[in-house]
Amino acid sequence: MSASAFLPAAVNFRPLMFKLNVSSKFVRHCRRHQRFSTSRSLNADSYEVVVVGGGAGGASLSNIFARKSKSVAVIEPNPEHYYQPLWTLVGAGIMNFGKSARPMAAVLPKRATWVKDKVAEFNPKDNTVTTEGGKQIKYEYLIVGPGIQLNYNQIKGLPEAFETPGVGSNYSKLYVGKTTEALQRFNGGDALFTFPNTPIKCAGAPQKIMYLADALWTKNGVRSKSQLHYNTSLGVIFGVKKYADVLTEITRQRNLNVNFKRNLIEVKPDTQEAVFEILDSSETPKETVTAHYDFLHVVPPMSAPDCVRNNKDIVDAAGWLDVDKDTLQHKKFANIFGIGDCTNLPTSKTAAAVACQIGIVKRNLLQVMAGDKPTSVYNGYTSCPIVTGNQKCIFAEFDYNAQPMETFPFNQAKERRSMYIMKKDIIPYVYFHVMLKGYWEGPGIIRKMFRLGMA
Ligand code: FAD
Ligand code: UQ1
Image (cartoon, rainbow, N blue to C red; front, side, top):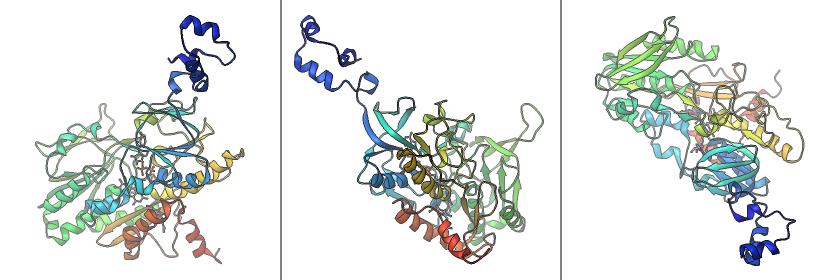
């Protein structure tokens, strides 16, 4: 506790000064700093808008609010920003990792303060966040966008398995290169692809890599001596019937074996075995099944980042940031908005969803800053371009009700080369050059153009 914390403004300090033998200069210093009246906030930096995370949502919104507010700080620990949707193609060996990365400094606004630190704690009752480095940062308005946490360590034996050949994961910058390596060196046998028993980002990515592996191994001649298994915790191949029907047919035609309600709980690298819990088993503990692998692609269990889920004031019962599904405003703290993967928005977690959420947060936060109620409503738009093979893509787009919400005037459930180019070249361009600068709010405007004059 600092001395200034004991000095209320109206007190005559002179007698006290003599007793304590302190100088008038020291008292003036204490008075000047009285607004920081406790040691907790003694070092507080203060901004009108603070953005947590410089990812898809955080970088885009900080660029918008750097133009629209008095002062903005972005708290982001990483020196690089990643466009993760390209990691499916990186894992498959179609694209270089470097194409997905940009220096963080190049995507964050020049007119904002970049705090190169990690948020450790939210203190919404004080309007501050605490960083791992021990800084207190004060805000008038807070945008929370630290993404989703990958919990690889929850799978027994997995950290060790990543040290062995044949095991990869497109979800992490650390392991995506291992997928590429493992796909190249695979010489037939059992290939396993997993989907965990938690919400994840891009729910299509766990199966996209299977289709790309199938295409690669068909091309290099090892497909005929291999069996591909997709072991998913879910009970369906995809959450939207229109696309699920087509994907089911593709897996049948290409002899890709799909096992539902299988959750990876352990990897044994010594024997190259993966243990799956059978989720619909009626026994306690649940029955398990062990499968041999020569290639293993793991999608880890995920959760909101620890700094979010550890604060019971800001999360729902499942530990996700508790925001209003229409306005994206926090349900308890009106000066907090959430964006992207860390939230409990009941839609599929994607960068495409983030694109639409950006416009909603922008308009609603500006209204709140002006003293009004937020009125913009998010419809849950999300999209998952499912690469289904060599230069082929099903372009799934849907809303909160899992109803297709397609942009283009043709059936997007059909495999198309044009949609593959859209995923591989056009959308990354839009992401880096338009969305991150704060000028892209999703394809709603294109959809409307195509629908002009139609019912
Ligand atoms: P991110 O973009 O993940 O950003 C979070 C940021 O917060 C990061 O920069 C991180 O460093 C920072 N951060 C983390 N913790 C803290 C902390 N404590 N304090 C401060 N900062 C912190 N989406 C699609 O739309 N289409 C696709 O085809 C697609 N494919 C995908 C394929 C793969 C393999 C993966 C991994 C993802 C894919 N996605 C896809 C999902 C998409 O990348 C995410 O949904 C999107 O990036 C979410 O944006 P975000 O801003 O919530 O989080
Ligand atoms: C999109 O707008 C977007 O944001 C840039 C993505 O981010 C990665 C997407 O994946 C998709 C699919 C969209 C939707 C875009 C169009 C043109 C339909």
